[in-house]
Amino acid sequence: MTIVSPSTTVRTDPTAPPPRPNRGRASGDRRRIRWWHLFLLPFCFLWVYPFLWMISASFKSRQEMLLGGLHLWPQDWTFDNFQRAWTIGRFGEYTGNTFTFAITALVITVVTASLAGYALSAKDLPGRKIVMGVLVAAMFIPHGYTIIPVFELVNALGLQNGLLGAALAQAAPGLVVPVLLYVGFFGGVPKELGEAARVDGAGYLRTFVSVMAPLAKPVTGTVVLMSFIGSWNAFFVPLVFTLGRPDLRTLGVGMYNFFGTDTTDWTGLAAGASISVIPIVILFLFLQRTFVEGIAGAVKS
Image (tube, rainbow, N blue to C red; front, side):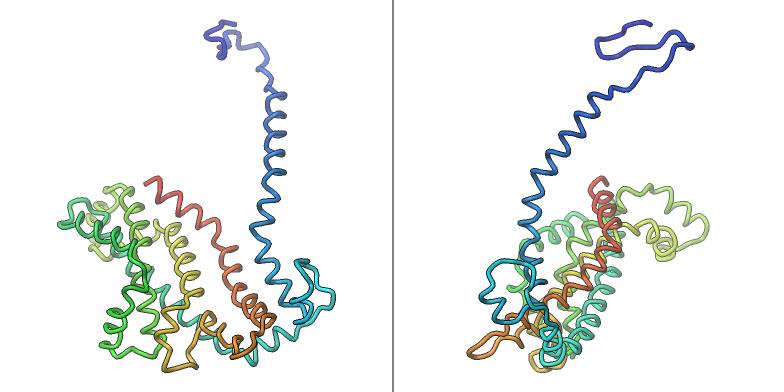
């Protein structure tokens, strides 16, 4: 056996047994990881405690929630809060409106952002740097400042007091980050793929639909999750665009039904919030792996 460096050795005898792994070092690494887990677990509990308390409060009586302190386990379980949120709070009606609003905004975001990202990924596109600069600058403008021109545009299209107009107003400001994600991903795809599709007779749009869009599934999954959560939790835009149609309110706006002139139904509000987060949790559990892959792929590109 020839020693090359203090830390590296080269086997010269092929009949010699392979070196044994350093079990002591591996055991030490696992022990340090466990200590880090024990150190971080209290912080994780503090992070999720408000969410757990909200779920717990939705099963408590009003008196127990106000006087029961910070404990999580209800003494007397009740489902009246959910029944009150579903009927009096009209959450059954608002859930359908929220699905329509969120899915419409999601489709607009995915189609527009993917096409814009594919076009802007071409480095020889005229005016590309200007468009990218405007997009990045738009990220720092609060959505509330642009609500008046957006309202006028939607009103000019005749879509005021409707979920389609509200979805357009919600999707437009949320396009910046999805476009940048698609630009980063398509910028890393070899040009030879597009050139091979054109040699086979595919046009620009056919190349995008048949070749590029299937490759961008991880980024599309990330955009779907981000857009759906943003639209599902939206409050300001649905509030403005449904002022004349209270029957079209979404769940975020419907939370106002629990606030009266003199009192507030806190347990009903907790039950309504618990109902609202169920679809988001289910969608995240299905798309969490795609979300991480999409973010990682866009960042590496």
